[in-house]
Amino acid sequence: MVSVKFFAGLRERVGTSEIKLDISDVTLEELIGILDEKTPGIKELIESGATIALNRSVAKLTDVVKDKDVVAIFPPVSGG
Image 1 (cartoon, one colour):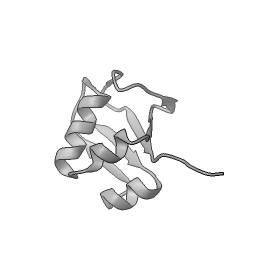
Image 2 (cartoon, rainbow, N blue to C red; image 1 turned 120 degrees about the horizontal axis):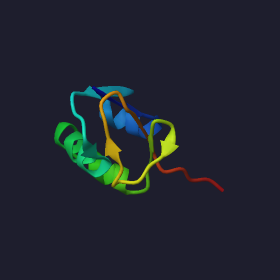
Image 3 (cartoon, rainbow, N blue to C red; image 1 turned 90 degrees about the horizontal axis):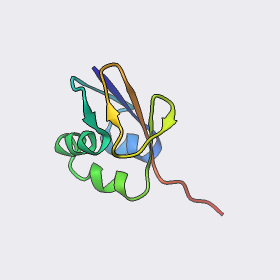
Image 4 (cartoon, rainbow, N blue to C red; image 1 turned 30 degrees about the vertical axis):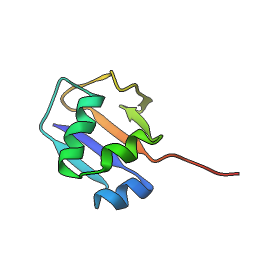
């Protein structure tokens, strides 16, 4: 089971702070595709500059997600 956590505006868009998925051995890019099937449009939001962490480390889309991993997705940050 993989835990996917959403923060700020992404949490509001998805409607929950956490989704648990019974998947393993998929890339983060594939995981985003799975999330987009459940919440259409989320892929676009994530690809617009979100930061993705895998087990508390900044991750790349090619990183592989395994059973019991935690994925955290943070929306783009802006400020001035």
